[in-house]
Image (cartoon, rainbow, N blue to C red; front, side, top):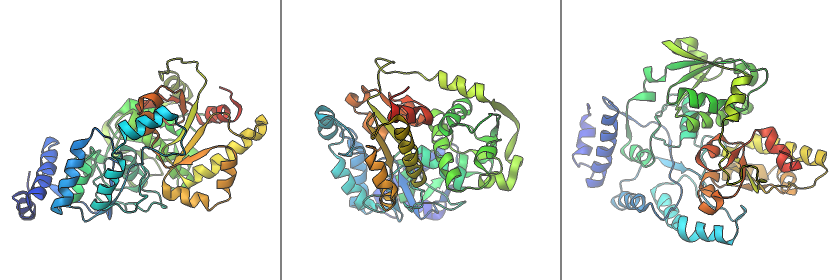
Length: 424
């Protein structure tokens, strides 16, 4: 790998032993993927994926301590993925004991380390850091050092920033070094599409279901999606961005997509059109039957597949302000139709703390609270990682949560019917 004189000096210890190790980590990472050089990280803020104070990840705390103690901290402030626990979310005594004594007992300690390293704000814990309310929204063309898969795919695709699907800890290493290796999605060629995906459905596809189908088909490749603009428009307004947030999270978790292009909508697709598509690209046609096939093949791994749901999670990735408002309307209408005053299944909507603060300023907040829905800042995935919580029959409309936990996927309409009427 070619290194500049500045980079060589850091590698040779000009900024201390710890910075030399950070630079060596970044260089070795790049060499693994055939990078020929390092490029500067240009975003104002970073985002870290490791947000949870798991007792078992002692090496992470050791690394963070060494960075802090040596002064090898990033020039960037950063946001971080959601907190794993919230007292407002339903949990029995034994579940809470597991959370607090055996799983996330280092949470307060770790949050202290994050603050020392440069957390943007004491509540900057969310997987949707790019939302306006949070403030970590990179500009087009900016080079990032992120790892959270749903944030990476959104930044690349919707915002036009440039970031590879990095691993946890590599994100902070790139930020501290100030450089990341140039390969993959940081290059023009790496951002060209390997697949053309043709949407031929008779109605607007469910975002998480469509993303799942594409992710499982193309895996880590880049898809160029045609026909979706018919359903979500040709402008990146709040509704389209919310749809793409959930769509992208499913492509990234059900496959390994780090970038997608939506014809007539996302920045690079608007500028370049089908010039983005590689010669010989494969074609995947998605119609109603294909989405139904994908949906029916999801495994249900509850102990009793026919059990009555005991908990519902919405918001993986975190819900937008628009979603909190629109779902308030949906829940109220569903309850009215069913003749119920409150949801019949304990239901948790998750969102970024900053989004929740804005939501609480609206008249929707009191209305949603009256329905019995809990609004929380946690990561549902981290909650479900508790082995006792994993045994609970949980429903969700998140294909990311379904993929990584025992939660059962349901469409939005099915979720609404179950939480307001108790109907499958």
